Amino acid sequence: AQSVTQLDSQVPVFEEAPVELRCNYSSSVSVYLFWYVQYPNQGLQLLLKYLSGSTLVKGINGFEAEFNKSQTSFHLRKPSVHISDTAEYFCAVTSFNYGGSQGNLIFGKGTKLSVKP
Amino acid sequence: GAGVSQSPSNKVTEKGKDVELRCDPISGHTALYWYRQSLGQGLEFLIYFQGNSAPDKSGLPSDRFSAERTGGSVSTLTIQRTQQEDSAVYLCASSLARVINTGELFFGEGSRLTVL
Image (cartoon, rainbow over all chains, first blue to last red; front, top):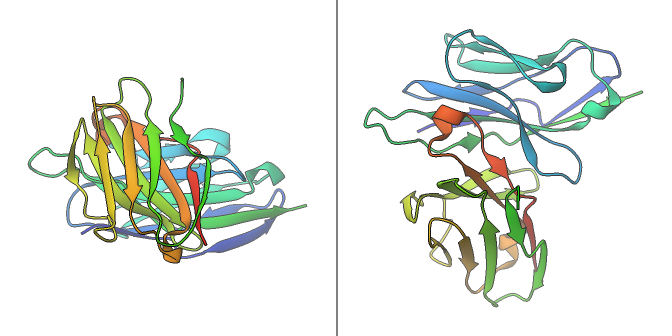
């Protein structure tokens, strides 16, 4: 079974500092990985995704993530955060079953990023 | 509409009552998901529809929960004999045929259920 672990429930950081939000997954098959963001009082939206190809993927708002198969990780990074990045970030995983059926999208418990001036 | 629409946006009910939550996905999206978002619990998968069938309903927490989808479009999540622990935000999302191809779910803004 798949699972996603977000190691930090809350990450406070000062504006313009770098940030890394950690995500580890477990799966016995090939995976596809996603980060979603939920701004205060808004719905979730896709930040970035890894389906195949380059292990470094870039998303919206200057975020990027690196797929590391050996460490089963997909950490999210931004070199310099803004106040407007304050939100909750969710890592998610799905897999491609051999029979061709679509796997579920399983989410982690989320990391609340709080950017302080 | 252009996005995923959920109703009601807020529902307050008394313990023991039944509730129905509705999701209207983006037109043409064949896959539809229900998730539950509780404080500190992240997004808990409930059920997934492909068309009108539900290949995976393993996330439904008890037999008080059921869902259906008709016409490959609107879905209804029903909770019978609600309990206080059912209080949460229920999120619906839709996608084109396969998430692994498109890589994106489109979420509604959720239905906040409060059971008194």
